[in-house]
Length: 190
Ligand code: AMP
Image 1 (cartoon, protein in one colour):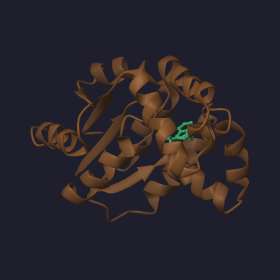
Image 2 (tube, helix red, strand yellow):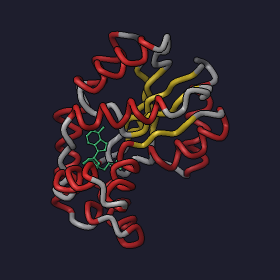
Image 3 (cartoon, rainbow, N blue to C red):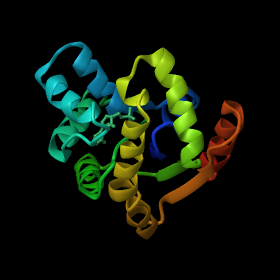
């Protein structure tokens, strides 16, 4: 079983790469951002709650996010493994994920960060915002707030996973195919 975490700031290409990797390695792709957006579209209570945070570019509270993630893993008992995209984003989420996987005799195999400079990411996100309709992609101050959330709350996870010898990073600048190749080269050594 292979369980991967993709890190990277908003716009780093996590979702794009996860959709290739899931096919290549036969994994279930779980994006907490997509799950929240589906809840918002379906006007669920969870969606209503999440929207107030997402609209500002803030993180949704940990326990809400952890419960949603665990429910999604539980819905895929036959999976050969998972790609976690956009989760964990805080140390509390990382700890909860480790504990949860342990109860299932599972563990994270590796975490991989896609690295790219902020200014390039802002450009990518503003471009994506034109077609995706995502309001959090259309306003530079909200985008910068999401980077700030990442720097403060998610970047410390580098140390968390380095201590477990599970942290890797790759250059996230290049064509989609180049980055997929970098990822698969790395994953094939795991
Ligand atoms: P993403 O699609 O991963 O960029 O996520 C979009 C938004 O969803 C984020 O800015 C957060 O508001 C929320 N979100 C997604 N994943 C998480 C998470 N693991 N923890 C807290 N909030 C999250």
